[in-house]
Length: 131
Image (cartoon, rainbow, N blue to C red; front, side):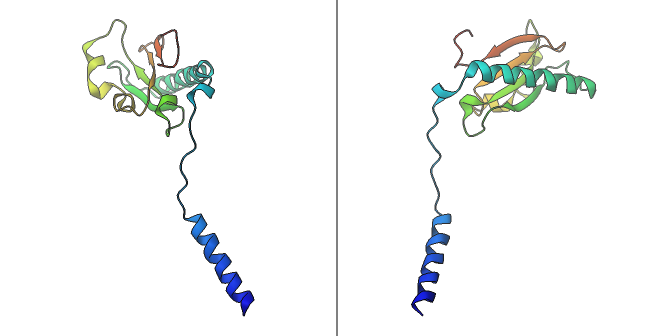
């Protein structure tokens, strides 16, 4: 009988422990190599750009190609978006429909801009010193 009670108590403790919300671990941006991360994001940007071209996507208005190009969605300071823009900028580039919503809403703090021909206009991160 005591063995049954012990087993039930143990099961109750285990079930209760599984349901406890655990806080997210602290995030230390200093431990992230943003130079490396920006390079990875840029490679993904070029890949995504070429996929869009191969699929016949119209890039003439400067659309956002990705709101989640690279990074950890739980930490906006690591998130990258990919925006197509013009150099020099055109009025279409300033229309919200052509901008990356994740960046505008603060869900991503880093962006890459390519022109419609796939040339890099700007790679921006507040964590990089050469912006």
